[in-house]
Amino acid sequence: MAQFRVTAGPQGLLPGGSDDAPLAGLLRAARALPPGAPLLVLVHGYRYDPASPGACPHGSLYSAGGWPAQLGFGPAGSGLCIGFGWTARAPHLPELLRSGRTGFARVYDRAGETGAALAGLLNRLGAALPGRPVDILAHSLGARVALSALPHLDGPGAAALGRMILLGGAEFAGRAEAAFAAAPEQARPEVYSIVARLNDPFDALFELFAPRGPGADHALSRRLPRLRNWLALQIDGPATRRWARSRGIALAAPSARVAHNGFYTLPGAMALYAGILREREIFSVAALRGSPALAEHEPRWARFGPLPPMPGAGLGRGAFRPRFGGPRPS
Amino acid sequence: MPAPIELHYWPTPNGWKISIALEEMGLPYELHLVNIGAGEQFEPGFLKIAPNNRMPAIVDPEGPDGKPISVFESGAILQYLARKTGRFYGSTPREQVEVEEWLMWQMGGVGPMAGQAHHFLKYAPAMDPPNDLPYAKDRYRNEVGRLYGVLDRRLEGRDFVAGAYSIADMAIWPWASLWEGQQQDISGLKNLQAWLERVGSRPGVQAGRALAAEKRNQIQDDRKAQSVLFGQKAR
Image 1 (tube, helix red, strand yellow):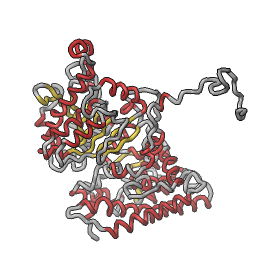
Image 2 (tube, one colour):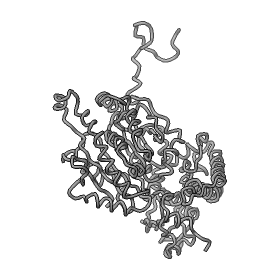
Image 3 (tube, one colour):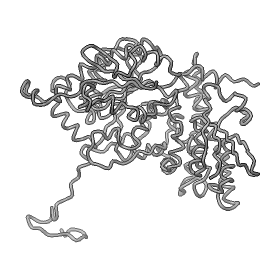
Image 4 (cartoon, one colour):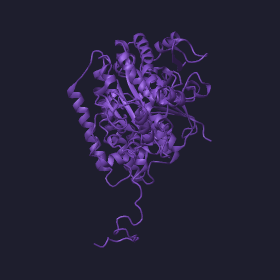
């Protein structure tokens, strides 16, 4: 089986659905992986909930035709994918009445707590499979889950952590730095922080509604954490598209101005992440830092500006005088 | 509809040359994976097709005389497929010479030098015990850099290396697209950068590059694959 599902809950880590094998089966499958085949944990973001049929990530993002297949998991020897489910939604009104804050803020806190359950999974994988890297691909608040796992890792779990691909990570740069500072010394993952101008409004909303406190400075898309092995890559930038195309990856231009799921729905994006998981040397952080194109990021709000100038703006004082070309008379 | 060509393949730069060519030429093919890390290139059935125990290789059930023919060596396969289809090989004897020059430049230069660069820069240092050889690393890194300089100058004012898009481009692109792993700095090689993007944007190249991409795993962490690939003796 190329795919397993687990769910974090009050009782700890459980199989994701009735058809899934218990964790012992997962570890058996992981031990049987061919050398070099990727072992990946997927972590969804806000508004998914394994307990809710309409919002269950196991039946959508993690389903056979979802993220695993798009990342090349499925054929024999193609690796093992683990869908990690957690309760990522909370109603706004009761939370507003109870604490005066949004349901999002509550889910943000829960994401931090869920990091311990993810760390438990990584620790078990690390102990059972010494020497095999375990990668993580996390979207939005799933990135906070992944980063919050770092302080809870034990030695084998930390040593196992390979690559973290954070899609539109809904976390503050300062808190990412704090998570790394609290992680065991063996934790040296390569982090690919995928940012997008498509996500600018969501980053702004995140900064507005996420709980404040120590480390709450700027979203990961706005400030690069001062961390070794951290690479920020703008998935919807023209320079990144050129760079991907020169490697034969058909990364498309976005067709919308705003999309929170563009990180995985933009054609070609998942092929690029599959490369990061499978072509370890070519797509290492060190190698990609040598690509000047990837350092070219568009400014924030680039999808919304610059606004076209008002007709006649700057021509005279208060008088509207249309301009038909040629230099402006001095 | 012609009978499908058997493609004996693993997703490496030499394998991509042929998957790209088949996609570009619109030829039907049947994929036969040759897991080089598991030693499948040494199986007797494959050695009958490719006596040098290297993929890629092809078997065309409809050879030039109507009978099946097998072809090994990626350069020879590219020439065979181009002759079979009459495409991507120039249209005059002069143009064909140009294509052959750059195809052979790849076969004798970029392929072997970049291959050795990959070996000494990535695989050898990860062996147990490590073989970190500064002279070998410098030698192949520099030689690849020199070749990319030649290519950049050749591409000045040209879209492709030999006239129109040809099998020479198909041969060079798979290796040159991996310049980061060869520890190259191509920031000053603007013609090369533009050509990498131009060729990489072609749907046929993208489809060929993506063939069995899920099998591209890291060999430097696979001791068995290292033993199979790098432990071969003279006989």
